[in-house]
Length: 169
Image (cartoon, rainbow, N blue to C red; front, top):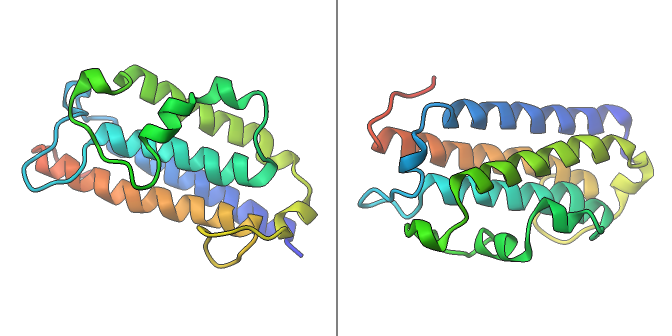
């Protein structure tokens, strides 16, 4: 059975990863979010949109299924545009604005902070399909969320460097 300590560790890791990501994003000019540097397959906007979609999937959808509030968190189009296997498009007109991406990123995270503490400890033992980390249950999805965000934070850090910005650390 998942214990309160394991859940608290997972939630703390999610918060740490988000803080780290926000630190990386802080000095990236928004007019460069859709820029794909030659040799790089992605841009900042796709990374942030993907993180919003993934956090929703791992921390909300996998934990409690679809809920009516989900349509307020992000549109189906947004979810599909940034899902696993999607391709970053550098054309700003084909993407949500940076402001919208940031809003969804923040809105999903705030909803996770509201809902995750309300789930019963027993629910975290329910099995799920991939992706997960460590455990094939809902707790595993929470643990994977922070690891997934840190993986993409590394990509954002690399993009920062290729844009000529100083490293954060």
